[in-house]
Amino acid sequence: MTAMPETKSPVAAAIERHYESARADWENATISAGDIGAECERSIWYKFRWASPLDRIDGRKRRRFETGHREESRLIENLKSIGCEVQERDPATRRQWKVFRGPTTAKIDGQALNIPGAEKTLHIIECKAMNEKRYRNWRRNGLQKAEYNYFAQVMFGMELFGIHRTLFIASNTDTDEVETERVKYDPLAANSLVAKAERVAFTDTPPERNESFACRWCRHAGVCKEAAWARTNCRTCLHAELTRDGEWRCSPTGAALDIEAQKRGCKSHLFLPGLVPGEQIDADESENTVTYRLAAGAEYVDGRDAKPEAI
Image 1 (cartoon, helix red, strand yellow):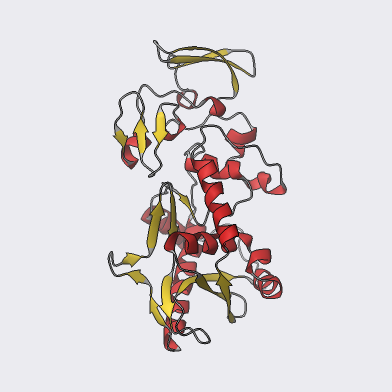
Image 2 (cartoon, rainbow, N blue to C red; image 1 turned 90 degrees about the horizontal axis):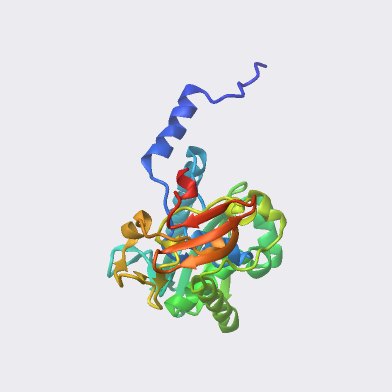
């Protein structure tokens, strides 16, 4: 048998390039329900503050995301085929159901009535696809124990939408088997997640570092552990203030900052001290400068010296 080449064929490489060029990399504007289950609050904070380099999504991964979205649509159609009354889009916006609360947000795959066994109860619908190992673990142990991130996502969604039941439906990508779990709203769990989100959103200091095996592939390892400098934007600036309704404002000017303004930043940017890999030794408010002694002993004057990421 002729061995398959280890390198990508021109056709496969072209397909992956197509996926990479068809969609720009994105930046979350809020702390989402999908993020809140992360064990490390520090990683959520770095993501919310746009501290780390953009998460570059390669073509293979983008194609996998597309596969997941297609399976979600299929599962919704499966529910409709058995008589469930599913609305996968918000009638007010004609888009996916989405709700904001301050700096947090939750999106759901649909709302449904006429679920077999609970016909009159309104449910949130959450669709997922899992490989054999994860699927079997979920079936043995339930969502809260086996897939805590998903559990947190649906709990947070129920809290923000004010709906107290979720139908979690998942397909096994290896066998095409489908199963469901009805998840009941737990106010203690939901309120704990809301408090976690607010704790992360409204602090200007990185939360305590969490040491775990997952640190090895964490996107934020550079700024967290390797003395890398954060990106320059409004969310990494000590002049930016987050209001309780989720709006960002510039404290010196009082101006509201939309997403594009936050990305651009301005020449008055000063890093949040917790994002500088060194010790603060001085500050001059009149000159808008903060001086740090870096790990190697050199001094860096923020507000005067060139931003390290631009050096």
